[in-house]
Length: 309
Image 1 (tube, helix red, strand yellow):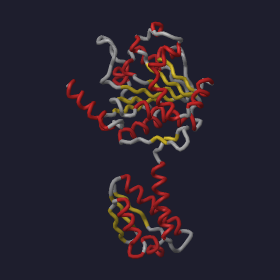
Image 2: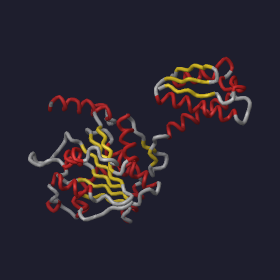
Image 3: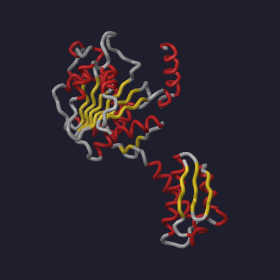
Image 4: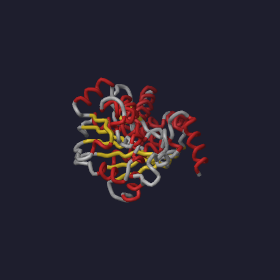
């Protein structure tokens, strides 16, 4: 990335650049960017991330020089701190747990997060450990916290029991909990457990099997369907048509781990083909380079790819 920045006040050029270009050398060393100055223009070169940070520092220094004629060492240090803090905060997903912000850790994950906030319906497909569910729940919790959604609904197909939950022991909650546990795990990372309980008591948060969504229209909500590769075509259609006004849907799945009978087509695979190219629908494909669990998970996924190809 190359970026040119104009020196606003040529009379304060030395103050901006520093004695013997000290401030420019500090920028170069801190952010590993290339810097050249020609006339009243500073040119930056390097990776997008580093150039943006360096430009943010220069912007803060120039703003200070609008009010004063010189920059102290503390002025320069503070400009670096502010720029780096602001850049770190940018892209962070603000959730309920105090002091905890979730961030995308790979370019693929960042594209996924961007797609969620940009589109009303987003599909994310990729192997285990790529953050599909985790980032979806984080984005949903953030929208709930900001008041941009009134409800959060998390759904999952109980495909291992063929949706026949009656064969499991216990009451309804005990029957479905094993299937919904991964969603609860992600949720508890974003929102304090006691607050989750209050939200669930007030129907602000629902964690339910996919089969229980039939016949509903969900307005002003964020609706997440996890493990979507295990839906049938009719189940996927049923789910997608629950989308109401001012709502967002996020559909996640791993197309390499379909547990449906061989003769049954995955609703996720079918939807990706049918809905491709429709405006307002985002489709993000994550791969093993986006795996952020234990380092061995990436190697395990790679090993199984060789086994099945």
